[in-house]
Length: 380
Image (tube, rainbow, N blue to C red):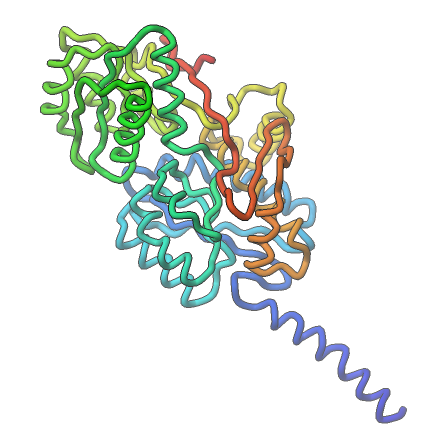
């Protein structure tokens, strides 16, 4: 055997080892790609996180059972941040420093996502589908943040458009005094201002509190026809229950998160008639291919989990991630992944169309109004 032949024999395994080593870091290796989620799994938003992740994991399981994407299994690592902004920052910084994350996904909480944007942008690590419609996550534009859902401003615009169409003009706003609630309040004020109107009253509750006494007093005194609620969870439940005990009986409108978690159950009959914006297709609209796929995947991989708008949103998120990876190719890097996502124009996810571009990462652009019936179910 000649010297050149020996060298070639040694070079083959060396090249393979070197190629595999070059994939290490950035959450990528020869067998898998790791997405990291910093989210609440021990606090007030834990039910929301679990519901969302059931859909994402169902899609990942579906893809992984078919060999993954370009031979790599998709992994989701959820790290509990307790819905605490400082903890979200800590988790994000640690994963970036260890270079064990390909992209962050499905963060929970507007303030939490806002806090990590400087880290995301500096490290050039993508954040895909934060569970927030806040304008602060969209402006100024970031190359590394991709949305799946419409913005809160778009949800509120749809509400205002709807109520004015049916002849209602006395609108009040109730909101949690946090990044989410303030975004909704601004959205209401701006949507009304475009129509040369103002909110007749506003009321707020402190972040983490459910003391709605002052908010109820201020809003009831203005006798609104409609109250748009930028609130979620216990504070919203307490507000609606308290308003129902006053002489004022306005129509309530809530944003898409309202149908997640236990709010409807806690309200009982008081939930009847609440208008709710939705940013995903109805989860039982089986005329859509993506909804049929979603039901099949949930039945097989998450049979105990709830079929809902939120779990469908998680499924859509999984599909966006996988499609971006497919388009980026086997030699994927974070930058190639970002480029691939930005090249997704009018992509059919299964009767639902998504678009990104180098200047627009808004994703799906859909909002519709639904109503809660007497049984706590969502009607179109």
